[in-house]
Image (cartoon, rainbow, N blue to C red; front, side, top):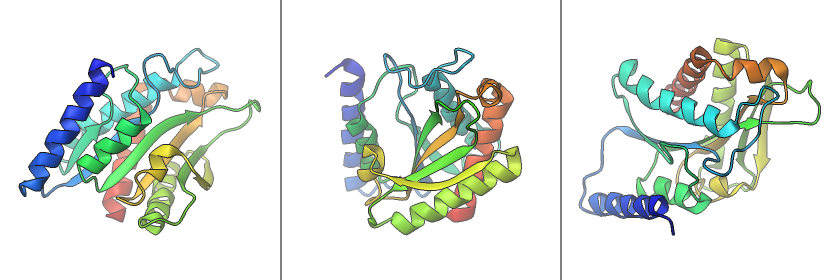
Length: 211
C-alpha cells in the first residue's frame, strides 16, 4: 500500500471513530470522486487535455464554491485532492466511512464517433436501497447542466461500475460523464476554467433541489 492510500485508510478510520462517538456533522455530506489520477490519465482529448486533470479541477471548484457561494452549506470531501491514483475500493470506503449523503464520481467521455456530444449520468443497474433516489438525482443533474450550460443530455444510464455498486446501498450515487473529449467543441469547452465553475454550480444546485 502506498503512502497516499495508507493516509486515506487512516482518515477513514478516524472518521468512523468520530461517528461512533456521536460527533455526526449536521451538514449534508457530499463525497466528490474525481476519476482516474496519477498514472491513470483517463481519456485524452483531441486537444491533448487529460480527463484526470479536468475532473480534478471541477472537483476543486465544487469544494471552493461551496464556501464562496453556498456559505459552507455542505461538508464536501474529495477522494483525491492531487494528481494521484486512489484505488476504487478506497474511494468507496471514504464515502462509507463519512456516512455520505451523496456520492458523485466525475469523468469525461470518449468515442470513436467524433460527433458524439453531451452528458451521460450513470446509476447502479441493480435496484439497491438508494436506487430510486440515485435516479432522481441523475435526472436533476442532467436538467441543471442542460438548463444552465446548454449541455445535450444523453439520458440516465445503468451500469455495474464498482464505485456505484459499493455506494448505492449507503447513499444516492451517480457517475457523471461530462462531455466527450473526442469532440473538438466539448474538449475545448472542458478546458475553460469558467466552464468548470458553471459545471460545479449546476451540480451543487442539483444537490440542493433533490435533498
